[in-house]
Amino acid sequence: ILYLVSCILYLVSPISYPSSYYLCSMLKTTLIKAAEAGAKQIKHYFNGAFSISHKEGMNNLVTEADHAAEKAIIDVIRQEYPDHFILSEETGELKTESEFKWIIDPIDGTVNFSNGIPLCCVSIALEKNGEMLLGCVYNPLMDEFYFAQKGMGAFLNDKKITVSNKTEVIKSCLVTGFPYTYLDAPNGPLQVFEKLVRRGVPVRRLGSAAIDLCWVAAGRFDGFYEHNLQAWDSAAGFLMVEEAGGKVTDFKGNPYSPYQPHLLATNGNIHDELRSIINGAAF
Ligand code: IPD
Ligand code: CA
Ligand code: CA
Image 1 (cartoon, protein in one colour):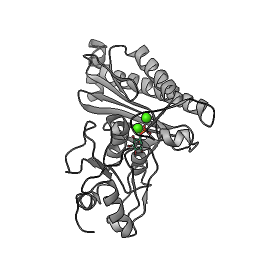
Image 2 (image 1 turned 90 degrees about the vertical axis):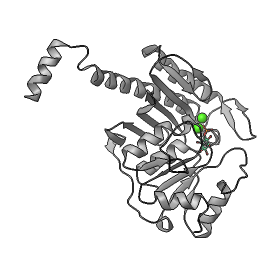
Image 3 (image 1 turned 135 degrees about the vertical axis):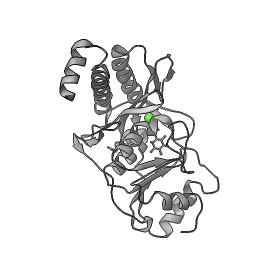
């Protein structure tokens, strides 16, 4: 019966009925094309010659490759969807009235990239009316393409991924990141790091928040936290973790928003314990 109803709806209204399905698959095609265009620039410049300039903070870099990757990504999106809102790290906002917003980090892990460390990626998310719909994180140097779609799961190179099942912080393997400018605050990045490391918890620092989040989604890490992120660092990775069965909040436990700096992403089991440690609880 359902099949018959779908066929009738399709015949009666071929534009509106299947439109959301087709729109989503068209958006996905554009997302993948844009990520591949950006990744091509990463591969082109990696270990080669490129100019480097400094943003705020001595080691907060931007290279010729960041700009080239960003242009390639935006060109693809603009060609297909000229009226969509774009928020991209180096360009800022290309504002429109659209319900769709593309959130782009052309190279996440620029310091790694500029040192020839193959831990960097293109990160692109698509938000619709404030809800994250699609996300992809592509590290072409490790051939790892992560993709997530709201309600449809998270994938690494087309294979479904899920978060780990550890239940205690003391037995977990964590990852974090540090801001380019020293953040001196109670329960700041170094205090939290020290507390965990003093108890012997392995806490890695990869240098790419988007990859950190994907590695939580893939179960390689049990949790990730960072004190000062931007929307482009976390938007795609957030969807990856959520769709892989994990949990993402701010440090107060509020639902994830790309527009606030604190981020805690875990397999879900260790979330409350790690959150209380980050907020100053004894450990
Ligand atoms: C940085 C990376 C790093 C994180 C920084 C980010 P960038 O992004 O994600 O892991 O610790 O907070 O700014 O500058 O390489 O795009
Ligand atoms: Ca970034
Ligand atoms: Ca960047």
